[in-house]
Length: 146
Image (cartoon, rainbow, N blue to C red; front, side, top):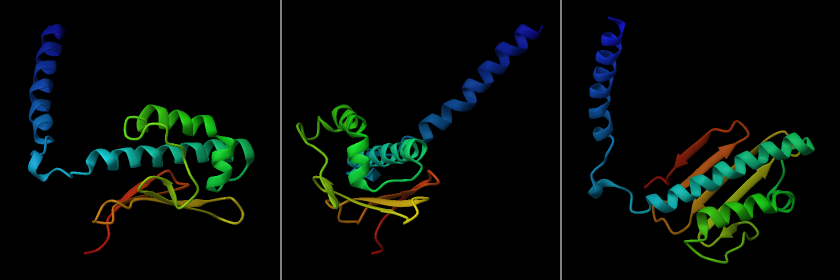
């Protein structure tokens, strides 16, 4: 008896989830033409947030961009190789503000090293698109007011 209930419950669950999946597929005409690029930028913000957590764990304070690059060069090179090399091969991270072509980073660390705010914007996006993150780990999407 309980096997029949499990099978019926599973089938009902699958049927209930099917419309949700198709409802999430947006029509191509309304999709952001820069979505792939914005996804890459989001991935880098996540990587920086993660590396900042490693930094504060290992060294006791959040670090500015030059120190992050020095302490975690392998992590950043791994990110480039995995996610960015197909966009622009042989690219290396640079100094702020333009750390990658068209990507501008502002990374402000508090004087005591107990917090930071980062903003990574896509300078090629006319809408002024950017991702913002901080020591809380929350990442926010923003666009310039028109």
